[in-house]
Image (cartoon, rainbow over all chains, first blue to last red; front, side, top):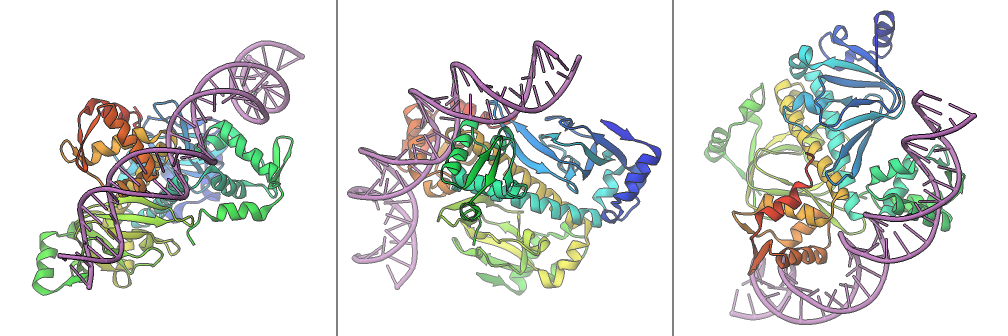
Length: 223
Length: 223
DNA sequence: TCAATAATATGAGATATCTCATATTATTGT
DNA sequence: ACAATAATATGAGATATCTCATATTATTGA
């Protein structure tokens, strides 16, 4: 992890201004940090001392269960907060956050800003929206995971993450995210190929029948 | 649904004051409502016009999937909000809320109070805590549901809902909540009886081996 | 109080998903 | 450039969970 100083810091703070998210001058407190690919921004179980706001890059929220299984709870992208749970709650089991690309974020120290942030309606209003979205997404994922087999959830995931017509997510990541075994994921992908929905091209898959995947994915949605 | 008027209304507003949750005078806007057992406070898919704050009673959040399965997303108790998602988000698929006992709540009309509420740091701070808890719970439930078989989740649920040493939840409700079929729930309950963890007493179950259930449930927690 | 409805109960057979074992093929750090 | 590590791939057998069918027993509204 690298902390940007002086001009470089200043450049980022100006280019990606987050002044509009606060009603007080936050700039002076901001630390600009760059994390390398696969670096851990927060270690599971360790309370962070900063509220992070992601400027660029991607990361993943992980939790490890006692039985050794790992769940990829969600992805984090630009304009997401990290550490907001710890800002709000004294008691909280901290999840691990690992970057999947080089990631730059603003780090705001709790000890200097907590009070002001928790009194700032503008900041809190943004945060409630962020949290309500997060809660809604989790509720949707939860109920869908119980109500539908992998077939439907995978179709949705493929459509959401495909780069044009090409699906190229790593299987290992997808297992953790969709909560199924590697073996089973491969079975269902093979089925999709057999049915002609996908076509394997080396390590990638090309979408052949958009409509069929759409139909499978559509079943997840309410109305 | 019945709306309390005059002295009755006044009595409730005083006895269960929520003045401390707002920094402006909310009392005059509050409507006090009583819903009967099994009544729907909000119909699935229909936007509410009020933010509700539950004073007494219990309710359930339901969502219906296209394949006909119903998920009981969560339980609602005293001091919970209802309709906060719709307060914050213009676009939101509204879940159904059904009472399971007589339920009394304060209803605060969006059209008269939205602006003030969204500018009130005190209110927003409480709401962020509520939402962060909700998001955390859903994330935990989600990842647990994928990482553990029913055995563990049911043990946890039994311990959490048991009345003293007696478990007496309705199977039909529990299926929707834990996302398993009625048949499978009964299988696992029978197993628990066979192993001597529970003993059936008419329609209820008496907990016999607290320790065994504790151990099963404990596997859900991180550390 | 009675008929309708909801909840409980259980069997039998299907299937979605898991575990484990074992290769092969990339990727990565030094 | 190579050894270590991570990712992909596939088979075989187990099990967690589902669907459907069919009874029996509460609960409830008129």
